[in-house]
Image 1: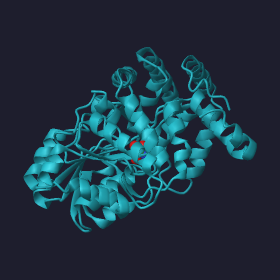
Image 2: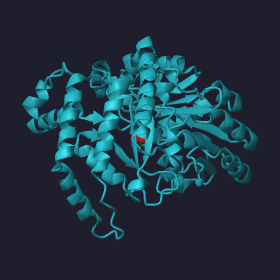
Image 3: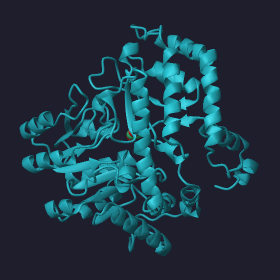
Image 4: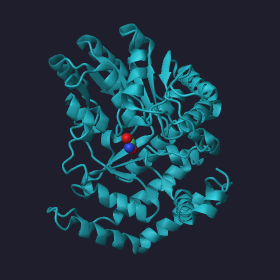
Length: 448
Ligand code: DSN
């Protein structure tokens, strides 16, 4: 990433803002479970001259000249993805997770077909058929749910699938703290004749690190973003498994056509190079140790929070993520938790919880995780320390509640935010956060 000296010369405003964001990342505890810090090598490859090229098509079959080098880069990224995930086909061109998932629909469904995915407020993703997403508008979406304990309700999913005979079923989601039941979903898909797509965006780093079961023997198609636990640049990969090719030998070709020309134009070759570099990093023993520590940290944080009376959906975690049920503080209190933590420099996101009693914009939970903290080198003792800080901060939101009427909510939250920013106890936690961040420096060679 260098020193950004040319940005400084040419665009002082953007230079200042990048500096501001670097300081925010360095001086805070990044606990949004879908975020991470890439290596400088990944950043350099992604910020390279490869951004200058157009290369619609695939290696050996491009619509523009001058692609003999790009062909080698893309082929290398594809080979690394296939080897790392143990699949016979990979497409590394999707711009990000949402287009990648849409490309899967385009490959295996016709508009109007029935599809199934995990319900949004039960931890699912917009692109798995939520009503406001194109996937919920162009396809007939039948959501499945989690049970009272917060685990995927397999029996419900099975009976919905048998009743509705979907063309495509999604397994894998964005706010689920337990191992995904790939085997059970593969049996359901088998029984009703559906394609099974595993969206492992959140857990792909754990899968290649051996900390989560791989979907490769169960799903026909696997999608993942590359910037979460996998620690690459912002992008995505679509893969077809041996099982997928057995079901439909033309599936790889259908995916290729859905990506280009179906959905996308020229691939972002600089990102493809960054993905290749990230995949190389993810194939090392160091990455396996990283994935192990991510889960160890998440479990340690979960235990330490539970000991302090914080309520976790499902009571704990199997992966990199925790979902805090904030209803003991009141309905719709996720935003209060998020704002109070942010005042101390701890970044999380408000999130719906199973059976959400409020709304997606004022949900009753908080989602947090350990991938980024683990990249900084933090371990179990730091998780214990952070749990103490979180529970201290939560004690400061007692007495506040989400106004029942929508009018006036923004003003109330703004005034709450001010209260948190001037709260002495939160200021003391902010100092401890800064001290912890200094002990685990981030991008310390990067000077702007
Ligand atoms: N925004 C991603 C996440 O935070 O999980 C999903 O698209």
